[in-house]
Length: 179
Image 1: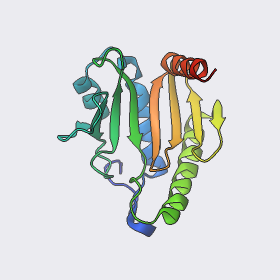
Image 2: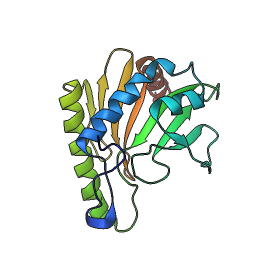
Image 3: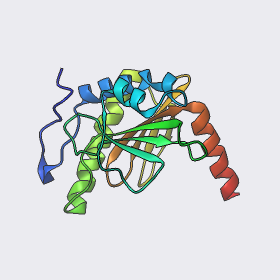
Image 4: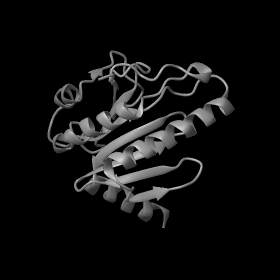
């Protein structure tokens, strides 16, 4: 398996995961779903095969990690619950390097990464259950309790795993706030 080697850098020097790597990553992320809100950071990182980064970002509610897939050092995150930071609610993996350099070339690269990832996940899990088009599109697969979310985050492309109940609660809160 080539999990530790990303697709070689292309135009702009950006790297991305292959479709095979992405499918393997998604399956591994789904396997940790039962640990969300139950296990500590070390257990989840260990199960994913990731390591915690020595230098953490500015948020107390995000644990920066290295996915070990050959992308940038901070290529993954664990998101902590705002009310109880001992609970991990979301697992996030970057599918390509983050933006650096010229934006228009990166935009085309990022759109290609999103399209390849969407196709690979559709081949693995079937048609998405929800889609959000737009400048920052998102595609979701509800797989029972877990939900996979493929997002074009403008600076990179990410795959998120969370429980459908947490996702639905956040959507409901967002609707209440905008009403």
